[in-house]
Length: 424
Ligand code: GLU
Image (tube, rainbow, N blue to C red; front, side):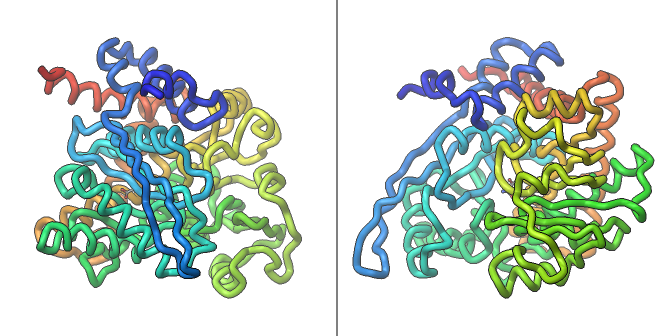
């Protein structure tokens, strides 16, 4: 299938169709030059690889992996790698496009990329994951690198997987190259504060939104869909600011208590049992019911498309802070707009992760490491500045926060494209 066919055949409810609609809307809003618009609708490069992997039972599996590099006009490509059974190439392209806008909205010098492997990591042993990761890295060795494209963790990938990528890449080059990935273990040049960074950044944007909307944090409530790295860290850092968590979920289901659920205890329960389900003193809720609970702040931190035209009309939160990438469809967003719900879009709300990835890359290149306090302070500066810039745009253009963030981001990328010119 040609790239054109793939883009035009993008499933109308899928993430690529959503990403293209958002770009087209931004292009209209800022009167984007048509040649730049056409260029930005397509990824710069997509790579599909087969990943033959020996399984523990003596069998052999050939996994499929992707890396999409959407844009590198403002610097090397940056973006995570996800391991999930539902990964598709269209999804990876959409996620790469969102990374371009995310890096631009917080004004860090990167373009966007994303990778994914179709697999069920929960059913694989550490050995299987290691062999699959090392072979995937080997297949990508020519297209990734500290000046080209720098992977990081995403859904169901973690610091250990980044360590295997760093080691495999370094073995191929013949010397250690820590800056080829971010989200590494601290012992290999990871940054202090990286693990909490996406959740921390999300909380900074919620705090700023509450100030603007005059919501009293101490009497407010929040709900988290997806109690993984992003959701649980956001909960952990939001709770001390005053709001009470009344529900949380993961892929197995959710739990709810109007009296509040202690964040740290729920983290311990999930670590012990593998899920938030069944936390003592709570009632069971489904992922769908949880989204419609009465609360002030809803943090969707799971996968794409969870807020859509079927449920957006029932959401009761005042603020939605998108910890996940692409949780709200364009049709869902329209309904939320009509109902006056304030959405902090993914490219702003979850940009804390890639921002500290940038700090990790800078520290690695300089072999000079910062204190955690320094990392958190610099993160706060960037997140607050980006929030303010987007909020001003939202007021000036009288548009929702996503359109405002896209206007800022696409405008910055377009400026870089103009200054460079289209080669040759
Ligand atoms: N996967 C994260 C995201 O979607 C982090 C990417 C990175 O640090 O490069 O933003």
